[in-house]
Image (cartoon, rainbow, N blue to C red):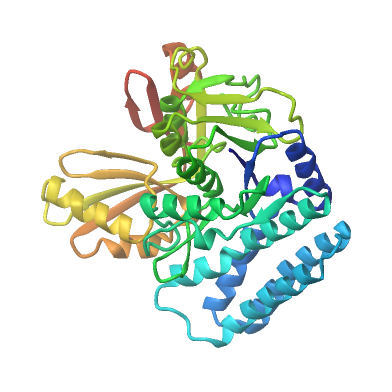
Length: 420
């Protein structure tokens, strides 16, 4: 079994879906296909959630209609055979979505988010499965809400690996004659049967979970880039392809913010020594990047990761107490319980400094979280640059003319928080 993951750009419309089928036909192996929501569907469904929670019925209905009409257009363009059942299933999904406006809203807003935003992957996977069947590929649609078991940590569920492995293996054994399985990335379910999500961009992680459960031969993530580059072409010219890197290096790059792979994706693959390929769906014959055990090539090419629109937050105790283990436990608990991601952290005797994404936090609410024990000061619109395998010359060139607000260095990694 090979596991393929196709992201939103690779299934964004009818032509893109047909290209996916061409790629699948190039392989004679049994395939497990993990698919993301089409194009910007997740963002659109987040708008649905926003209007639901704001109790704005007109905007809620309008945002639902946008998502429904988009998928109807894709279906009409495809002109699939025997698609009436699928069209009715999709109508039923949107009818159920509209009814949510008139049902009580859960006190846990993350619950509402997961039940709604997860529909994007359900829709795209159902459509892709029907395209494959039309093209005479022996495909079977599977529901990740019955395969991947998580806890009740909505918006970023934690996987129950034993139960998930059991469920996936049992389901696959029921279809020995199927060549291709199609399921959803990003989503799972609780023991009560409620839908959970694995965090934004979690479809890569889903592919790794399934590969782990099946001890797959390898995983391929199909992207609109030639593989894993050493920097984002938006910020750097003369980028280079990383043809082969180790699991360790990939985890480091993902942790620091490399956008090609999800930070959690590599660990389960490393645990079973399953190779991960990053390849282009626009040029499927090219080699792309392979991520595997061998570390010999890791230091050959420096890598650069830029995170813009950051907030540098400094937290201090109001009673002039040290930032010791007890104080740090209180700080981390507040970040964790409110699902706030930390991109960098550093502390002195009296201050804990951290970096967060500006577009993912409400600073007013964040400051209130730490009252009355702590005070918060912050700098907005700062930038984080991470350099793997740096040299003094590289550092000097990147920070020239910039104000360094915070700096960290280890043997292999240098990180700088810079103001404009």
